[in-house]
Amino acid sequence: MARRCPFTTTAASYLLGILDPHEHAEFGRHARMCTPCRREIDELAPVVRLLKAIKSDHAAANGQRG
Ligand SMILES: [Zn+2]
Image (cartoon, rainbow, N blue to C red; front, side, top):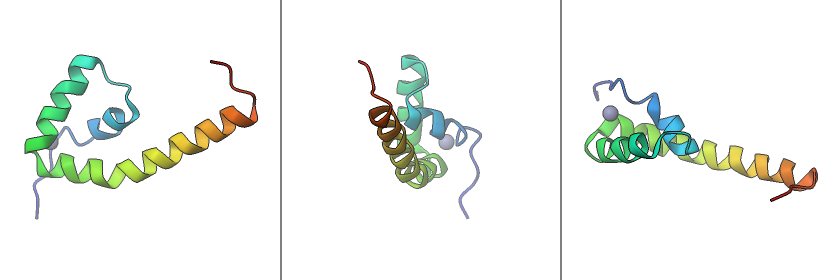
């Protein structure tokens, strides 16, 4: 079993792009060497893509500006 990593919770923020640019780069580097974090990213990526698609659908439906 893979060990847990305290940074896996950061994966969602990383994928959503709400981290500082510095944190984003740092987590990206970390995830490359960290199996639990990479797995978390792999699992969350489709969900985040879906959420973003739903969000942009809503925005389009509501007449998005800019
Ligand atoms: Zn990690």
